[in-house]
Length: 299
Length: 299
Image 1 (cartoon, rainbow over the protein chains, first blue to last red):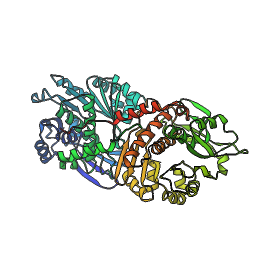
Image 2: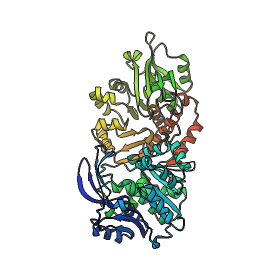
Image 3: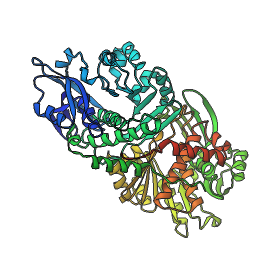
């Protein structure tokens, strides 16, 4: 949980709530309550933001409050294509001291989403869980492949689902074909692999099966920040709600995640996620059905 | 109709039949006969290649044979990503004299595909048609946007379907959002727009509707040459076969085109297209159904 300053070619904001755990919680809380949040914030984290999360059924017992540090802060600027960005500032602040402790009341959580952070911390969370969750999903990024590959590889043996983008899948596997990359990565541990391709949608791999989810073609992308985390939140939220981890239901979960991400990019940070309701989400999911549905009469 | 020399990071060939019209004919002839081909070849064009096309129901009356010129020749080298390539040689040869003449026997053709070539020649073909075809589709490329934009814009008012890739759609419209680009391009004339995104699939736009077709995730892309033309051939072939130009059937045609393109890239040039049969194609189309099909029970 963090604060971001975001600049796009069109607008800018100097101070908006962000962080992977924030986006995951906002997206997942549409489908399942409670969300047992684990994170760390500094003295500058607004009580109002915490209250809004609580109102949505987010349990904050596992969120540490540092009295003497500021919250993690990131400042970034998007390029004209809205797909690439420069990081201008990363102030770790409270994150320097982060050592996640799982409260007793969180034990027994069946669906776990490990947001992108140091793999050693993700491992620590998994090791603290006394019963193996029904499903552990994780996100990561190229930075950890460059700087903590051994930990990352150990973590991969402990999880069920990995979400990465296409260039990260290629880097992790050393394969340029995504089909070969997926096969190599699934050998490293996760039974399911989701490759996120931004405006080109997402691929879900499992055993020898593959599912292609479209992205909603959007008139404008206002701010892509948090879209990947929002995807992850919609995905795990749907699975936790349905308690069905079949490949068939995973496909639906990928569509739900894609729908949530399509809302996220409509306004700065999680602003749009705070506004939408379940009927908005259901309508958006039905748009995805229309988007890919075709009649096949092989005449 | 041409000859190509193709180099990929893995293999090379110095002499293989190619050209937009060749790929379109091979793909479309799986669905409709005759194909009324219009093109030009030189003295070096192998009789065997012409015979193979004839056997597939391709009418060659509109193919001019130049006795004193070689066929159009292109040499290209693909980069490691297989998405970008360098053109090493372009010898126009017979194409310098190309002035397409539509034989009387071709009059009344209902489905016309204008392969990528000088827009002035594409206009000339349309003007020679005595009855307006049921559907005119056209392909073009960035080169003509840079060098023959006025002709291209005139042509756009005369056709029903335009196929371009995503960067060309952005260039033609001056819009970076593909949704806005599509709207702008449809105002230029074509009622239907297909934006080809290679390994990311294709988008079909019509009025305020959009359809997203996936690309088949492939283990290996052996040679992408001709994939776009093969897509166009499958698309127009399916429409000519079904004689149904509703948006619903256009969606199926885009899937058929995508399936044909997925075969094309499996071997050099049109080699794979010469091998496959209708049952192979139907099986491939069913793979596309599995690829995007998901169950939606909004619980």
